[in-house]
Amino acid sequence: MGSTGATDAVSRQLSADRPLEAHALTRSTSAAVVRDYVNSLTSDEHLLVPHQGRGIDGTVNGLLAGAISLVFVSYGTGVTIVSPPSGRRALLVIPQGPMLVESCGNQWVANTPFALSSHHQTKMVPDPLRGAVVGGVDADVLESYLAATSSRVLVKPVSLASDVPLQLSNPNMVSKTWLEACRQLDQGLPGESVTWLENILLATMSAGLAPFLEQAFAPLPGNKGAPAYVESACNYLEQNLGANVRIDDVASAVGISTRQLHNAFQAHVGQSPAHVLRDMRLARARRILEGQAGPATATVAEAAFDAGFSHLGRFAAYYSEKYKESPSATLQRLRGRPQTTTAGRSSE
Image (cartoon, rainbow, N blue to C red; front, side):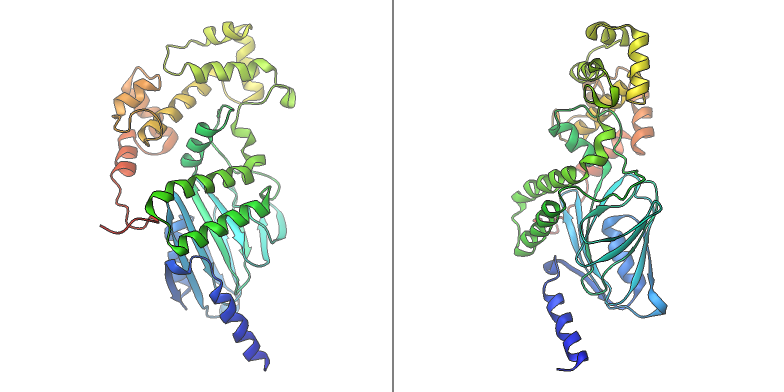
């Protein structure tokens, strides 16, 4: 067999092994079409630059599995992808072949999963035929999951900013789990199993990102010199969100002065106790609005009061500032959105 025939055989074999083949979105020679299909799910508005002006043979497969977007993409030729800072999206890349990656002044050949930086652009040169799987979720969803499942207190927004490559821990576990999820979706996952799959993907994403999520949690006692009363104070706040909590009460509960508590929070959490309390209350209100805590049909006012806000106008202002949408917009987006592209559900 000649070299051309061998190459074609390899290409056919790789095509047969592409993840999410049952959820094909496009097969196109247009770089703009391929880019736009990927962006429609990843929401990262990346740039796609073919090498030496060559045409591409692009394939995009993908869908939404609950709140998580899953995309497989290959280009059939050499390309450079330039992704902007991911901001309030957590985006994982699972290379299916060697991928040259450059971010934050670091350059490496990735064969295992990594995350895109929330603060810096990432350049990638994927394997032309094998491509990559990209998984994404809004940081709000990841924060809600962490707050609901972790024994520790979430005190800061999730931020994937690092001076070192955002290479995931437990990379084999992450790869195997996410690729198995793709296989399950290709085989036809029942609608009632989508939430189960979504939670598994969030769990493995959280485990893989654990070293980079540490800064979002209250420091553990003894961690980086943080005194035990900082964690105790965070736990006190978490347990009393709905009460009329004063910072003096928190300090008294953990046995220190208000000034000492404020200084310790600034030194080890990076925020004042009052700011941490407000963020915790906002996070709880958002979980209620998303239907993940409290009554499934809670109104904006009920979510605000349950989370400890006594002034609805201030709550709406704080919420809009933090989440870039109003509380009522969250209700409309999450409870009233059409579900036409989600795994396990058919179009209406």
